[in-house]
Image (cartoon, rainbow over all chains, first blue to last red; front, side):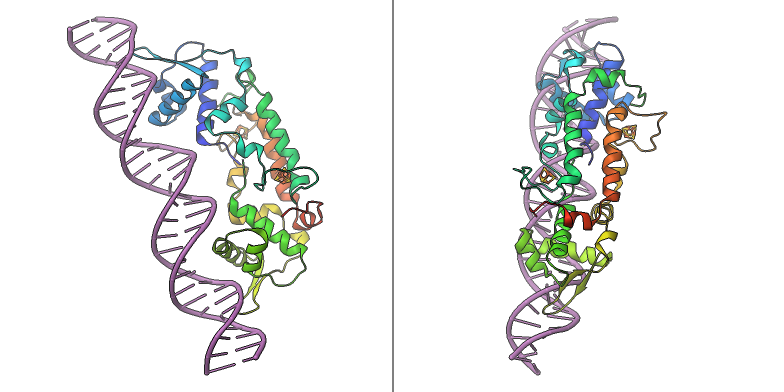
Length: 137
Length: 137
DNA sequence: TCTATATTCCACCCGGAGGTAGTATATTGC
DNA sequence: GCAATATACTACCTCCGGGTGGAATATAGA
Ligand code: SF4
Ligand code: SF4
């Protein structure tokens, strides 16, 4: 019932980068500002880069920047890259190939929450997170 | 975003036991009927027994039975015994000590779902699961 | 050119969830 | 009493998410 640490880190970094101006952010500065293990974050940002969510610039004064418009980056995409969406699309009791005619005992109590979360992940964009009133990152 | 396998097994076993009459159920029969690894389920049922959710009878023709009324056993209690409720009470970005005045960027998009799930876990009882229309176990 | 700072890539460690094996112990029915 | 069948307990294994260390590579700037 919790995101992977990696998804949490990815979201926090992207929000932090988007909030503090548009230019390059080094892994070092992100690690220091957000309290995320340096080496771990390095590998994660490299993954986000290879998946096209961010752009990397090597060498001194290098770092990462967000290239795509914030309204175009949805939570579902971030989570899918980092940990995959399988566990959100499957369900609480782990059954797959569910239909309304053959539900598990939890269906009427759970499926609404599951659908709501999945819808939220697909509809919420980085732009909304940046504008949200939450200050803590 | 998924229950532990152990929680899934526990819920499925309890629902199965409650649905198929009130008497003793051996780990062997539960394992066969539900397709749950025998040894693994044995340890899990032993835990449920030590926590007072079920009662164990040793020896030939022994097994486990539910003693408390079904209306009194809530999902939250089962989940708490098996995997703990921490990850449901904390939140999606892993912050603790959250208040409305100092939210994280996800708060307005997530906290509603979190509260709904927690409320569901605390209010749903085994009796409701047994009566639900779901046939698949 | 040389150095400092940055990403990139490799191998490795740790802890916990899931699962297996074997054995000890309890108890029913013959 | 004895065999069959049940729970109880201990030790161990595998996989993976999280995390660390070190060296290779790229590059801006003195
Ligand atoms: S809650 Fe519904 S969708 Fe989820 S596993 Fe059960 S039957 Fe399938
Ligand atoms: S969503 Fe709200 S309750 Fe959850 S971690 Fe963020 S601020 Fe805290």
